[in-house]
Length: 226
Image: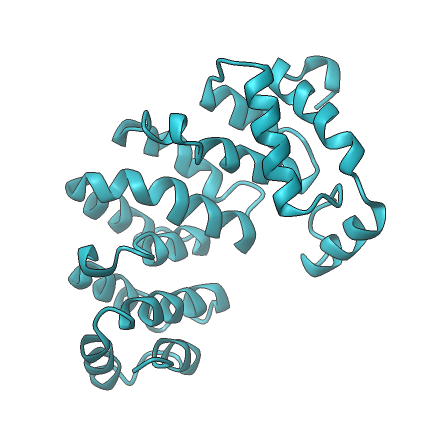
C-alpha cells in the first residue's frame, strides 16, 4: 500500500516506526517465520510504544478501517500493530459480538501462528467470553471449516479463561479434529489442554486417558501438568 494512500494513522505509525527499523533484526525475524513475511526489525516493546504514540497523535481511530489499512502493508509489524490497536482498552471496550464477523476474516489472512495466536485469544476471545451463545455458534462453524487456522481458533479461543472455560465445548472441538494430521491443530489442542490443566488437572487427565485416538503431540503437550 503506497504511503500516500494510507490512513493518517498508518502514515503516522510509519514515521514513528522509522527510527526503530533494524535490518539485522528484520533478517532474523523473517528467517524465524520461514521467510513468509518481510519484517522491519522492530522489537515488540518498541512496536507497541510506537502504536500508542501514533494513536495519541491521530485520534480518533476507526478500528475496522485501520486494521484493513495495516493489513495492506507487507511488513509483519504492521499486521501486529493492527491487533495492538484492537487490544487498547478504549477499543476493546467497544467491540461487540457483531464485530466477530469482520474480525474473523483476518484469522485466515496472511495467516501464520504469530497473528492467529494474537487475534484469537486476545481480540476475539474477550468478545466471545461475554456472549456464550455466540461462542458456541461461532466456534462450531470454525471447527467444521476446512481451514486449519479456523480449526485452531476454535480450540484456542478460550485460553486463559480458567474456571470460566466451557470445558464440554473445548473437549468437543478437540475430539472433532482428533484425527487431524495438521501440526498446528494438534499443537493447538495440546496447548489448550495444557493451559486448562492448570485449573483442573483431573479433568484433563481423564480426557486424555479416555481418548487414545488423540495425536501423540496433543497428548504430550496436553499432559505436561497432569
